[in-house]
Length: 196
Image (cartoon, rainbow, N blue to C red; front, side, top):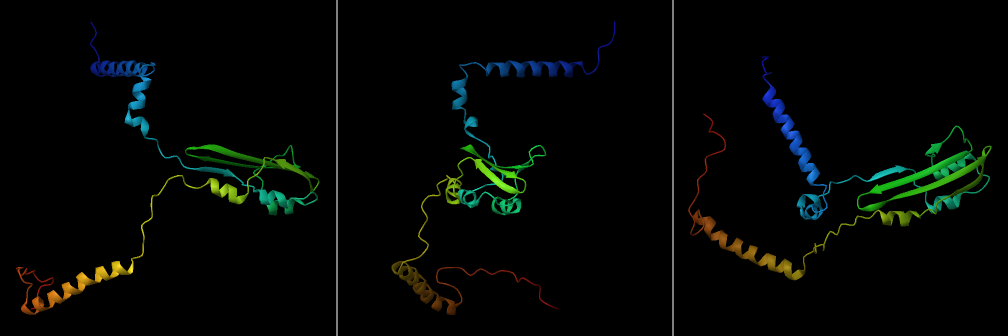
């Protein structure tokens, strides 16, 4: 009879854990469990997703500056460097812009310009938003609440002055006697040792 390996109990334990995880995972796929999942507070927490901006944004104002007959350099100065240029389509530049934000549907804009030789022949693409329209879509949807008044009124300033003035007058006689009335004097050790 051969001897059993020393790590056999650990292998059995790993197999039992794997089977238990498989059984629990299969229980979660039932339709009756879906209503329980929505109640679970862990499902309410969503991780923060970073805004992803890719490509060149081309505004309506930039598109309105395009005119047939412009050179490639003039088009590049108006629209910027194209995102996509192809060896197979040397006379076409594509401008693509995508924006993915948490809680908002992804936005995608495409615009293409076509050249004949070195001159702009035609251009077409999506209806581009103006810069102001696009910036308004980037606003944060989180409400910050009411902003408190940051300036005190004359009445508030006078009310704040009165207690401090009366308090200062009450402390003057007490300072001459050495300690305020009704309080015991606290003696603290010196911060530095006396020089010898």
